[in-house]
Image 1: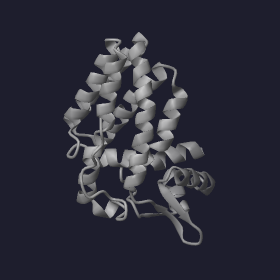
Image 2: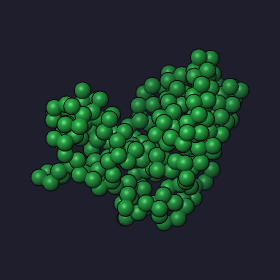
Image 3: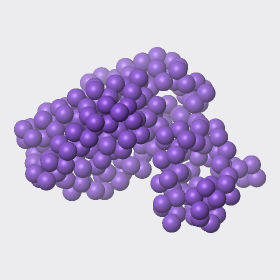
Image 4: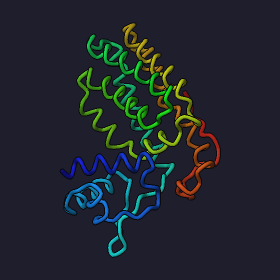
Length: 227
């Protein structure tokens, strides 16, 4: 039960249904989800460990503002893990997983047409998860999931203005091309380009939505990083 509550609250925070800085009430959330307060309390603790909420004794629980440093730390970890996963997939991914990726790309194009950021984000998540699980890297994917909560909020905010969906789809297609061609170098290079997209969108979003970012951590200009 607590796991379901955690996932629903995480989704609500990532998709800005709960805004950065907003207080969260155990009683109100329990009522909204039709559960007791205990699983909500457990979910709050897990969300705190993920860096999405802060629990202040005697004051309450609050959604944390987006911290640029945490976003960059998560991107660094995610890149280290997923480049290795992409390289392994380039060495050989089961046909079933390749078919799942192609079906996912088709669904991404449909979601882009309907301009549904939440649906596209879920498909993006499934795309990366399919690659990791396809090469038996389930633990690696769990590591990525546990570190990228702050990153996911920025990814949601970036769609589709700061980061055009067509660009992301093209990047996904290039990753699949590298995998299909059994070229580890190409798959890894395409994944690197894709995961560094956030370096361009983060400063723009911090300027566009200053109230959502921690003012001490928001980057003032595009972040340069060597290839």
